[in-house]
Length: 70
Image (cartoon, rainbow, N blue to C red; front, side, top):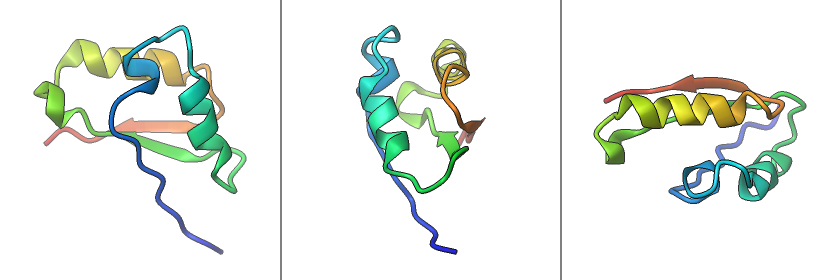
């Protein structure tokens, strides 16, 4: 099994929640049907509303979501 980490810093759902093209593209680079996505909102001070926006956007995508607050 090949392991990979795909990372993105900003853009995507954070800029335009109605336009998830960048998010779709990143997920398409994975070999998984249901990739795991971990959101790390440290740059926003672990803002709760930012985390909710992540879950709201990514529930529409075919992936398993989680977040890591630091």
